[in-house]
Image 1 (tube, helix red, strand yellow):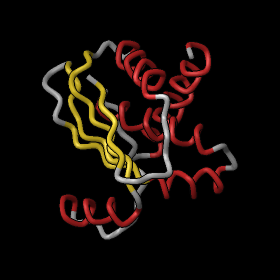
Image 2 (cartoon, helix red, strand yellow; image 1 turned 90 degrees about the horizontal axis):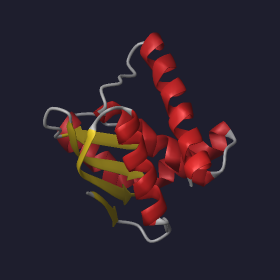
Image 3 (cartoon, rainbow, N blue to C red; image 1 turned 90 degrees about the vertical axis):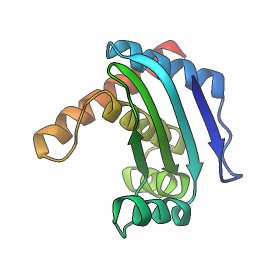
Amino acid sequence: MINFYYEIDELELDEKVVSNWIKDIIKSESKKEGELNFIFCNDAYLLKINQDFLNHDTYTDIITFDNSIGNELHSDVFISYERVIDNAVTFDVVEEEELRRVMAHGVLHLCGYKDKSDKEKEVMRKKEDEKLLMFHVEH
């Protein structure tokens, strides 16, 4: 089950379309859908989570808590919509596209992809691009 929670007012998603796309990502990686909670918040909210749970004192666009069981994905995925908006400007893309990239990024982490090394980042970016194309083709 894919759930969406909003700690902010400025975001409206077509939850059915986005949920179906996320399900397609999961299937395309030969994983099973468990309970995925996407929590959309602001910078201050996510910074507090970053400080309290990861001991990082930095802003970030996404934090993915992986509670998966075997091949079944379970997670709380926190996304700062403020960071998404800023990143969209930085990368010269529309906000919706950047939001989808960040969401795909979180799901890909759950599927086992990392992004610590340059090689891992390269693979992650290619996978993000692949999953973004799935949104445009399917939905």
